Length: 219
Image (spheres, rainbow, N blue to C red):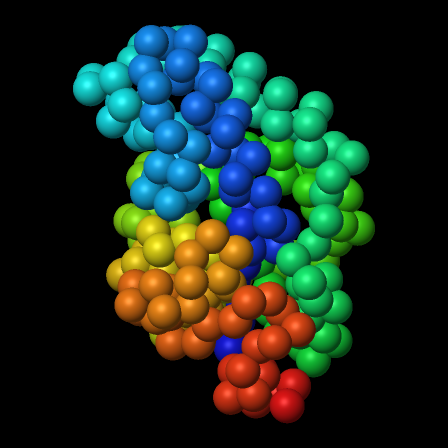
């Protein structure tokens, strides 16, 4: 049995540019000017404390990180609540997998309240066998921790897992975990995703390659 592991932001919903804009605003208050694209292209999948330490040049106190992140994520939920929209075909594909008996899991750097907002907005709160967030691992992507933890939660060997990701860091993390990877081209081109190690790439879930569908028995 092949299991399917899904990233959330940028993969099931195309919201990474919004995250970049909100992170830009958050670190501007710390006196740092960072283009939004750095957040969703270079640091996608990192834990928040890792991003902030990289920008300011040193680790920040946990309470400072918590305050910055909570304000930024609250703003995200305020703005995105009425805008939650799937990447084309995502929900139908997820449910086809479940109907075929495939184990499916969510492996995301998104905090719990953000996950709940998106999953409820898409109507898929109960569609995953396991949900693993950043609180469950020590290191963010491109380290393989979150995918290995998710495979363990599913009780599926890493080599039997296929990861769906939008970010180069996520593709690298999947490959480092010994998993196969599918790139969803919302923030990066298909060529960039293949270059990072994606075996398959597509613009959305309606245009997944036939070979990938066949792997899941959906062709």
